[in-house]
Image (cartoon, one colour):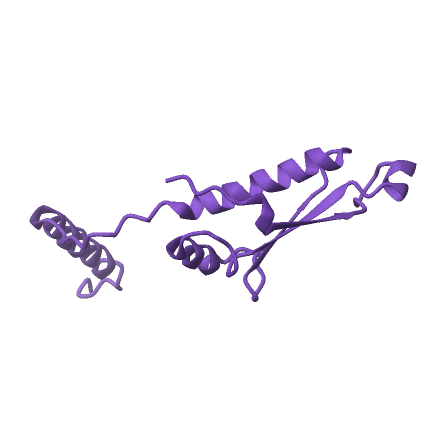
Length: 134
């Protein structure tokens, strides 16, 4: 199930990029902060819940996803990259996780476990001091 993000719900802020870049990095605001409010979005409720349940540092306590993109020298490429990363984040929670079915161990696995425990018990008993050899 692919859930697309409405570009009107995304807010972009142009900022100056960090790191090396010579004079260009000091005079041009090419990096982008993308802000996406999950609560006010048009995403399905189930996707919103799973997205907010993620323990991701890009999601604030108010439910706003903040993504910073600064790899390119072009503002438009950084916007496109930030949107792709947001879409990938939403796609990661769009599919419903499979429910785990509880199963019981097989009879054979129980027997192997008990045999291993008995073997270890014997090995540990033999580690004691030798008695009766006087």
